[in-house]
Image (cartoon, rainbow, N blue to C red):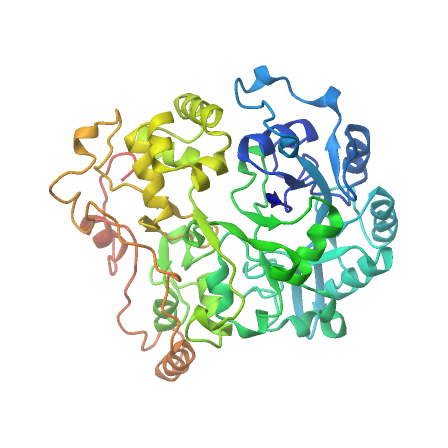
Length: 509
């Protein structure tokens, strides 16, 4: 049977996470989102393990469900939590993220890994081994001075049914291929144990087509997860399976891909991820990879090094001209969270009471958030919502969106409407105005391409840029083209060449 799963999440034991990351709320939000299987996250933490053993009971092989006495009452989310079939009662699989910080080949490495365990006994064995290496109680995601290869070896010794996935493999600071502390190949990191890795995680700032540009990733199933730090963020990325609901079946699907029952992913628009583009957040400078090359990776405002993003890193390591060159390409769906669509329409924040009420009403009628975003016909959505919501979801599905790329830790923004199409108050008379919505933005957005940057010939362009800028730092940088969503007056302020300037502006300017 077909079902959706999100494996990489966190618990309330992790730093900077919601206090509601407990089994009760995870169960409720999995129902609301439309997930059949969720990872427990943080399974290496002893306190979280005790809580899981108290509140969960075994279900299918290697999976668990919430005990009935811990389930939140339906009054917590009126009309939303009613189970529509047995599979809508979410299952938990034992997962956790481990942060490895160590030195290898003359460089400090920071690699995050996602581990799957087949049962509580295996988890206790894993905890026993890791606590001899470092502190596993101070954070739900432990930080250990442990080579990622050695962590993989420990997992294999704990159980031959464990499963190991390099997490968000392109993130600059903490990943196996990250620009700041990663490696250029999987083999450089995992050496002779690389054959025991069968899947990799995209991370929020990349999507499958970006990964398809690298032939050395063809051997791996490409999965996506939310990395949720609050229950509401579940399923912003997820995986589609068509198999029985059990740990062995899920493991086999991720290991064998299409023949095992893996069917594709649900994705963030990668531009919304906070490390998609290059840039310098402090100076509000956002750069595409070629512009970064032209600037020799220096911020044009302050002169410091910019943070190279995921797209730039993929471009450097890619060896293909087109993602279609990969043979096994699974379907994927790029989504905007429903609350973000409603926030845009209602003209208020995604966490506002007005958005919450509209969201709850839609989910109560539509089945789940993912059912609304992925499966419901546009006509159905218009019936349970209205024509504005239906048009927003239609545009999202068609990838007809306005994009502001994330960079240097700053989330991007994906909009389905132009600035003046749906003002606060939902003035439907201007949903499709005859004229444009302002300079540089037309009423109907352009369709997002399969990949958001042409990587053809990037290597040659990189070498040419290096030759051009062979002088001392700051010399011969040439003209920079900064892609920022700034007005003419704002751009003049940013590019002010020297000397004092006075800026008089109101809030938000």
